[in-house]
Image (cartoon, rainbow, N blue to C red; front, side, top):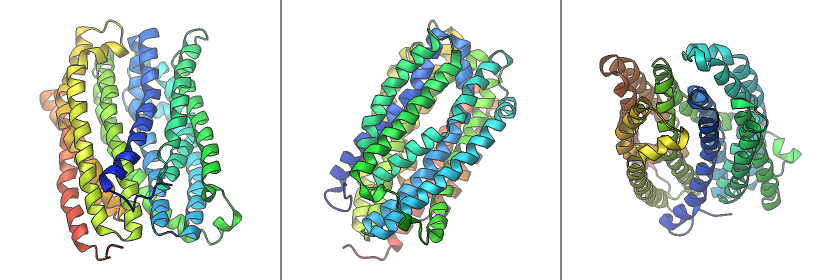
Length: 444
């Protein structure tokens, strides 16, 4: 276990964050492998089909990540307070809630697959392929739920390396299965989806086995379920708002995808290639969110105000340095990025991809501020301000997508994310410093 309440904050955060960054990038590798192999073997229409559903899949994944990350915060706070009994109840509550959530989401999402595709204006020429891909991914919802649950519980206990090791293995397996299912077995885009689901299940299973061997506290016992009612409520109070907040952000992105879908297959293909590259920045910032989340949760539980302040400063420095590097890399490599996903892309596809990346990448620093401050506030048991910030993001995205797009076209879609990030930061940064001033526990 890595105790984040001790040692130099900058070094502790960096040691914890690097494996998380690697894990998130390999998790992105699942979808990137699908897109590259689909685009280069099945063509631009198949890539557009995967891209047209990506925001729906991302919507579900965001809720899963936020929901399970909330459970990790609960466990991290009890770990920082050295509350062994509370840790056992936290693991039991997290497991039970995850099972119920998986059953509900799988049934609802699979039943609504076709109405959702109609709602987001999926082009007719890619409709069936989009349905085939999305239905299989949603049918396998249990895989990302339990991978993210196990990973977040391990990270709450200070272990950010174990999830990475098994994710690397399953990512490589995903590539192999993609090729096998698509090329010799001719399963089309559904084959890419099955490869992703099976790989995630294997990753979750292996991560669980290793976690049970390393941390006795993760083994479920009947005693952990005794008097679990208040723990179920407390976990829902943190996990559900975090999941809802992250999914609310995706509603604006789904609106953006719907607007792009209406522009035709070339726009969808270019936008998909650009947003796949853009996801690298999002997942790196999410990794820094995971690191500062566990750091602040442990130190909040231990009552160490000065370490929270020092850790947030260190996390901001690290996060913005990474965002600067990613901005430069994406702008310089934007043309090779498009050709990575699509063989012989048209000038129209290049135009859509370049327009998005040249506008969004220079504003990654805003995403970094949002990631660090929002997560720090949530880890100090304030769910109200992050939720309000998410609503601001939603309003800004919808305003840009609907209002600006009507006035300036596709550029309105490109401006939606930077405007949303700026609006949320305007609320969260003052809230964070007010909370810090009002923390009254002394350092221990």
